[in-house]
Image (cartoon, rainbow, N blue to C red; front, top):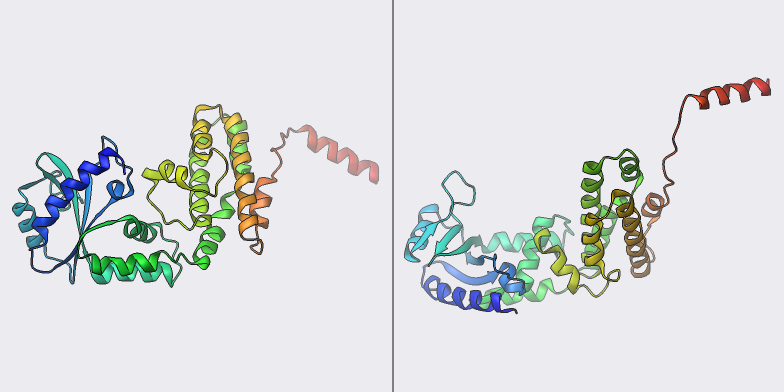
Length: 293
């Protein structure tokens, strides 16, 4: 845990002590970048408060008042109730019913849901730091550690078809950098999700994509550096570099899941550069037909 995370965690413990006495609060946990040890100078503090039932808006506002908190955003903002300012520091307090958390866990571990939102719930729990009611949270943590192979396979099947470069090649040849970098970002997203699945790691949000990539033992060499570098290159060079990363990633998939059908991904990578056509081809084909007659 870095120094930015450490002092934020200390502050969270002070807030937790005020929450523990609130009727109906079953557990308090720190999540987000603080729990993962990723905090930087821009990071806020994320605190999850667990209840038997979702507290009313009035109860949430009473808690904010007792914490001497101000709302960071106006009422029209969807984050108004959760985004607070305590002692001048931004704190997000998320109120979660126990049943909601349990449902998310079951959707992922039993239903093999590939929803990134649901996966993020599990990642938050896996790395979360319990401050109160740890006996409620630890059983969840124990269950989450058993990342199902079936879940990894579902993610792979969903994302591997995105290893297709035909339209990216067209965008490069047509000098359309907007399309190139849009597709580049989309395909890199698939690479990230696939590598998470190969490493049995839940989704930490894309905000921390490169931090998590640095922690993954099973990945192409220097993957984070290489993905970033593509945005600094010309579209043509970026397309070549992307092909290399996809090829290496697919090899890892085939190594770890040899029985998985990866034909569609290989087909996408084997696409030949688009051919240029002009009207001469019509005359050439007509001449050929005439000679055959």
